[in-house]
Length: 211
Image (cartoon, rainbow, N blue to C red; front, side, top):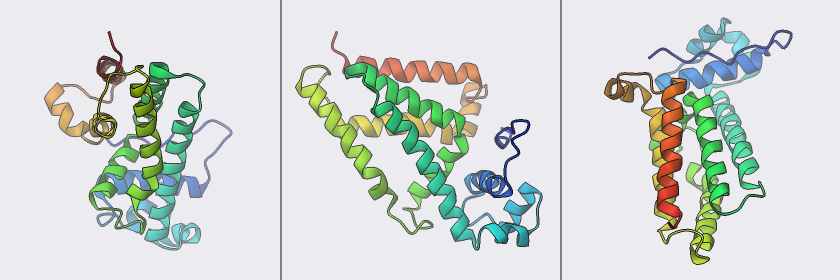
């Protein structure tokens, strides 16, 4: 599968060198990992020299940390918007699932990067990634439990339900090259993404909503 292109540039709105470096870093770190990526690789992706990159980011650690800061900030913003919507019950769950799926579809390299860091236990970030995500996880589990206790949803183990959703969403994008061999099509094509999104929505509706 070809490497995803950097974000499109809107005419009249040229991306700054700093933003271009961050875009290139996401691609390089996602595809080669932290250890397999050098600042020279990222500079070459942008089309600049290493000293120019170091003018914006003093080290690989600094750049990697900012890549993740932008990743988590964008993801949290998308989730918070869906969570704060006035919908309740199943419409809220569907809205959050669609928001998460759309974000990952728009940023598949982010998913690969997140999975790499989760496997490494946040070693390259110097932070506990699970601790950063734990508040959202707990908030979601509490919401599901309230709705189950109210009879809106079927009784399930809320934490296990969230882990199933985590795997269903993230693994599809991080494992796209492998899935392409199973499906004989690009799993990130619009048609394949539409089918996958519909399946996830239907799966969780069947698991949660009483008939």
